[in-house]
Image 1 (tube, rainbow, N blue to C red):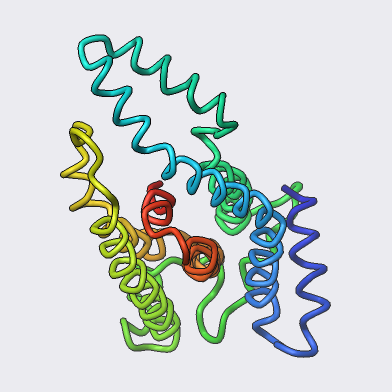
Image 2: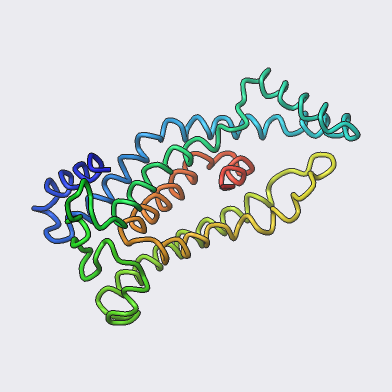
Length: 245
């Protein structure tokens, strides 16, 4: 983690002339953007895979009907179809999975009082009046929801709520546009109702993690919303499937 801390500190030093006391916060945003840029080729590959899966939905529905009484045979037949068409069932998960290590590193970096036996100097860095190592309850205890630190969280909540609302509307339209081919899979009705609401769970994450990790989440979530809108603009059903965690 000390190597990761040095990376964030060096990036903050580069941004200091532009962002002054908020340079470390800016470094976290830039670092997150670089991570997302690095995994963007995988996101594009995942989009191609989701579109291919959407094209295969009539065949998968036919296999489900054919092997309705033999779930094991049905699963094997679907996997064989995916292999034949060179479609990976896990393609849509890879971009999210590869970002998890960076998020957990950010979380631990700004939750640790000491790094390499030395006091963690990054904890004293701020975004305006909010320390990057503090959480929302710390802001509430020092100045309240509309104090200096509290207003930073208000701004983050507004951004997350705006992105979540955008995702909600888009996912709801996408789920409605998904063709019903054959018998609906078990649980699909419940998924159709619940999936559009999942974006709002980010509000809870932002409220409970250190501010530095919250910045990572907000930046990554905003990037995802824009990326999906572009990559899935010509394939609504695939875009809806890609929003599943």
